[in-house]
Length: 206
Image (cartoon, one colour):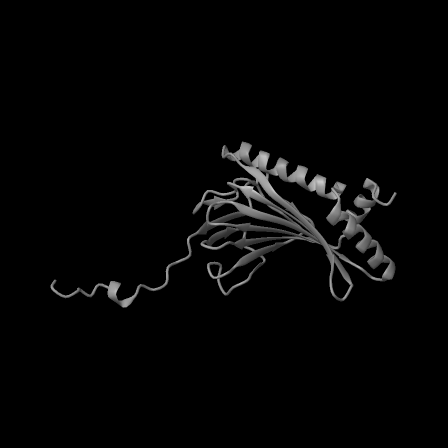
């Protein structure tokens, strides 16, 4: 039938672009989202993708069970590499076709508990480095309460006018990172300029 693993494998291979998005929060946890996009060129492809999307949203497909297995393996490897207890929770999935009907998207997410020590490096979990293919990109976002302080190697693009002023940074494939790379340092955002009363003027009676 159309729900056999071979169909899923074919579908995985037919995705045009893959985005790995990591949003790091102030408490050191991270939201990992794998987003796969597929161009839908005609009615047949649209119909096939919609059928797949319905099944993906309502059943435990091989694509999703593989994703959960990989996520747990990633957090296990990270815990072994860093000696920090970690786990993968809060799994979610969604497949959809855009309004124009020319693109199908599959999104799968999980919550990585204790991904990074706060105000320290993100990168020690990438033992042996990381490889992204030509049709893939890695996007790291700074969650509420944290800002980018350092990133190595230099990202291909940043969303703001500076690293510290960016909400997200992106590396485009094809790229092979060395051990413990990419390395990102997140810190509490720089505080706004001090209000006038804190600038050193002395209060009455001093």
